[in-house]
Amino acid sequence: RDFADSVTFSAAIAACGGGRQWRRALQLLIDMHSLRAEPNITTFSTLLSVCEKAHQWRHALAMLEHAMAAGLRLDIIMYSAAVSASEKGQQWECALHTLDLVGRSSIAPNAILYSSVVSACDSGQQWELALELLRRRLAPPPA
Image (cartoon, rainbow, N blue to C red; front, side):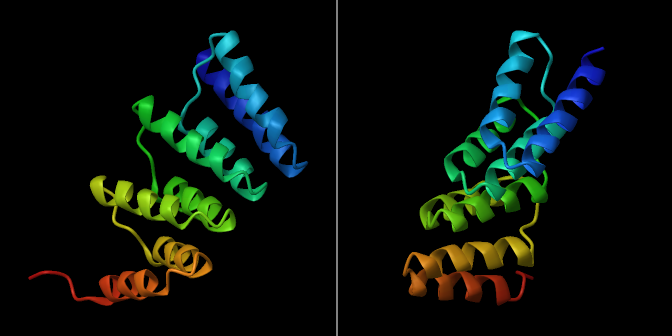
């Protein structure tokens, strides 16, 4: 039953995202807790995506933190959405923090993630940092 509840809630959250109803999507997470339905990785990933598309970087990063606190296994898509939300919110420090979180996980950062972090640094007028990240990305792997 919990699985079906999570699937149903995740679908409703995704529908909210299509209608740009990010506040309602966040309310559905609260409703899940009230009904003792356990959010899963799909729930948090969908919420993060809804918040990212609505330029709600604080809420997007909170979803990443909640998923981590719940002990869920995050994927590169979630990290990339968090970086994209940071970029859209001109929060280069948050983008760098998320890149650091990826570095501490077992996930290898990809070109899309690095590109978003570099763009966030650029929009924050941190061009030297953006160049350093580009150099780091292009450097050959250690032997």
